[in-house]
Image (cartoon, rainbow, N blue to C red; front, side):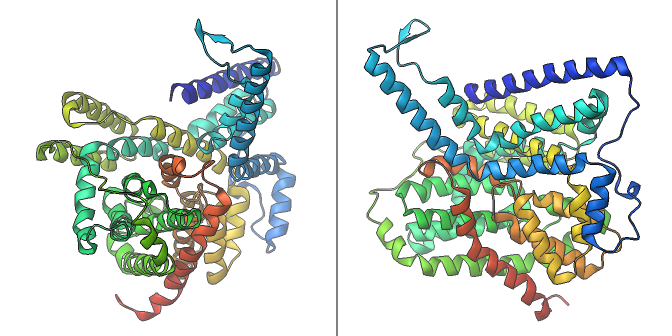
Amino acid sequence: MKCSISRISFIWGILALVLATADAAHAAQAPAAISFPPALNSYGDAGMTSVLDVLVHRIKMQPLNLWASLLFLGAVVHTFFTHRFHLLADALEQRHRKKLSRRGEPGRSNGHPEIIVSGWARLIHFLGEVEVVFGIWVIPLLVMLTANFGIKPTLDYINSLSYDEPLFVVVIMAISSTRPVLRLAERCMEVFARLGRDRPAAWWLSILTVGPLLGSFITEPAAMTISALLLGKRFYTLRPPPRFAYATLGLLFVNISVGGTLTSYAAPPVLMVIGPWGWDATHMMTHFGWIAVAGILLCNSFYFLVFRKSFASLQHLRAGENEDRRGPIPAWVTVFHLLFMALAVYNLHRPALLVGTFLFFLAFSEVTEDYQDALQLRSPILVGFFLAGLVVHGGLQQWWIAPVLGGLGELPLMFGAMGLTAVNDNAAISYLATLVPNLTEPMKYAVMAGAVVGGGLTVIANAPNPAGQSILGDCFEDGISPLNLLLGALAPTAIMTACFLLLPSVGLFS
């Protein structure tokens, strides 16, 4: 943790120096303040009917729109090649050690004899950590903005963004990954797993069904954290074949993305629209929630049948039970953890109270340390950093996403939202949809359905996905491959798409 966090701090320290230098240059000229990104109604293109004409016009009006989007595209492409960076880093490290071995120089570090690792290998490995990709690409973005507008407009833009979601994910991940919460969730899923005699297949079905649906009540980030940790313990320790491992990961991401739609506060894309569109919990359950339950059951059944022979082979890969044999946790400790989670959800859009809740939770953890494991902060912090970088980039993509969404019919709109979700957080897609005027109710449904269905295709498609990536990354050799994740998520995404297209005609709640 210290290594990754220190590297992030070093990079952002350099950025601060660059921004200060650029600001000094602009201060001498005292340029007029320029607002970036421009408001969508400032382009004067309301009469244009062609989406291409609108985009070309907006680039001419503000060329930095294109450059900001190209930097965002660079970050997206970077996420698909992170495992290549790990392979290159390992190769550089091996070459470095062979060179030292030939010279007979083991090296010394801090007075202790040990092999000196390659600085280049460390740098390349750092560039291969998915959680830091968007934060890294924020650096050239902010340098570009500062060089063109000065530091004040750049800082005004940064300050205009909402970081509630990244902060909330850090807090909820830290609380939900504690021993009392995990023990409670495991006991709940164990009730269903016992119906299958505690076999790996029974735990697999229980985690991938109950876990995502719990997300509608304890929030999707918490459900992802708990489900990923339990899958790591109950499934991935059995060393499933790579194809089965990626299929399970893709299924987890898709199920979590749709599993939070039973309520109006648990799924990030839903949170973005409940105010502007007036959707409440009843609307979510009757229009999305029951379809999500049916889709999750169908997806799990499909993959269960496809990999039924693989389940049989898992029985022989590990002997004994993977049980936590430590003493029981008092009920009052678990109740207080659930209370802290509830307070975190309630204070989602109140950063000061959210931080205060987390500080009180840390104090409570110290008092009850006999019933706690070591608090895991590395993954939450890195995931928060990932999402914060995505927020910064996503705020500059309105110029092209809004016209693209607004120019589509219902069916193309659903698939368009799904495709855009794969390359941008689905909460950003639903938020931008609220900016499109005159969307009908069927079009709103299409946007939301596409956003939640496409939330499992990539790591960046849904806010909780980086949490799953961080927790389960070590279960995959050379890390998680974005391409294999995409392939693993295609089948459940197709099933979910069919459910959201066909089941509304059943009229279960009409």
